[in-house]
Amino acid sequence: MLDAGHQLSAAATRPPQGRGLAFWLSLAAAVIVLDQAAKLYFNARFSFGQRVNVLPVFDFTLVYNRGAAFSFLATEAGWQRWFFTALGIAAAAVITAILARQGRRAQPRFALALALIMGGAVGNVIDRVAYGHVVDFLLFYWKDWYYPAFNLADVAITCGAVLLVLDEMLRMRKPR
Image (cartoon, rainbow, N blue to C red; front, side, top):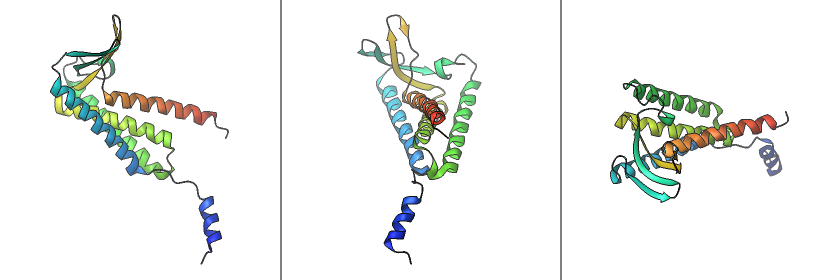
């Protein structure tokens, strides 16, 4: 039987345990719920193309995107719907496998980035399956220049991608 001193020193030498797969999947699920709730709100309250000015550079609007980022492939005959659906499902499966393999050893910034990307990807997959297009409602512009409208899933994917790049840059700077 170990005394209290041995138990304390053994606990102090163990590597810290991080969050597990369930936590990161729950975070991805929260992104999906927020994204879908916002899309349901805008679908119910706005008509297609309607805009409501919020700030001199920002409007709420309701538009649909049959393609991917920046309406990439939006004018195609319809195959892109299933291509981007399969791509989103594959991304979610790969991310789940990575997080499961890393378990509680996953670095928090890396795991957060993956959870955000997965939540955003699944949020847009749900739209493609349910509606045949992605619902977008956030529109930024300056004078005659307009950034393509986007949604909360896109925000999560972008934040996740930025975190992945930041994580890699910080990891490269660490001494070995």
